[in-house]
Length: 194
Image (cartoon, rainbow, N blue to C red):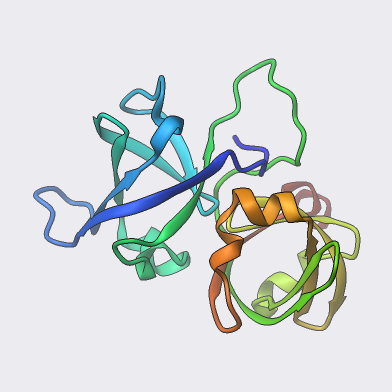
């Protein structure tokens, strides 16, 4: 379980598609200071995708991904040097400052418009049609693992606004129109609709 409060960013150091086990891809990510205390078997959200730490070396960690992960998220499109958002899993007793984020990405959206304003950046992105019923104005959404509030939604286009701090500590400073983002809709909304 995560909160969508991204702790920082990491850099992709290596991607291996010829793994010795049954995983589709092994990805090595330099987590920097966020690797402190991490143990093999623990969960880390990278761009909002819950992955398991399988090997550790100083500040770098290897994560394995199956085909389902590479098909349903944007992690299969990452390249060496790519920047990913990092969030370690929630500990019992921690503050829940964002919203309930499971790290189970529902789909991939595409950034359609970026409006830079003096105190914020508004981002419009296309939501897969099958997910649009779960996206509500003023509701919670996780974009690349970042807990955000939906500002507006028009059919399959939704917008969020980012404060300067969010842009500085996440990978959003690297995003441009046409980029893909991982989307996880609010779990509470899913249960209510069900």
